[in-house]
Amino acid sequence: MTARPTFTLTDVAFYERDVTFRMPFRFGVVTLTAAPQTFVSVELTFADGTTARGLTAEILAPKWFDKSPDLSNEDNFDQLRRALAIAAKAYRAVGTGTAFG
Image 1 (cartoon, rainbow, N blue to C red):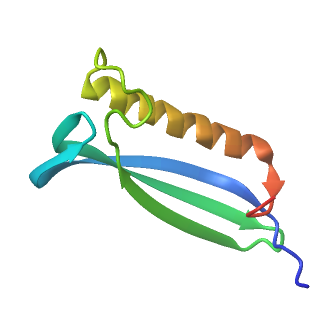
Image 2: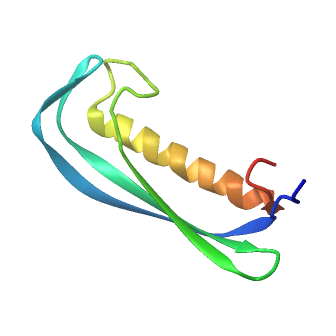
């Protein structure tokens, strides 16, 4: 069996752009015509000193976590941004680990 590579998360960055949909999109109780798209960029440093960067992106969808009709789409977008920031802080706190450790 091959040893699992260990790494340290050395950087997490978030970027956003506004996306306008070509057609309205029904998502649960809301109909979206536009939403922010968040890009996450991470850099890992491996035990041997090499680095790697990974990127991903996703639309922030209102009512994803909190289905309350009292919250605006912008309130929901802010909840999702906070969740991303909490996740980044948690991953940074782990220190050195493995992909599935």
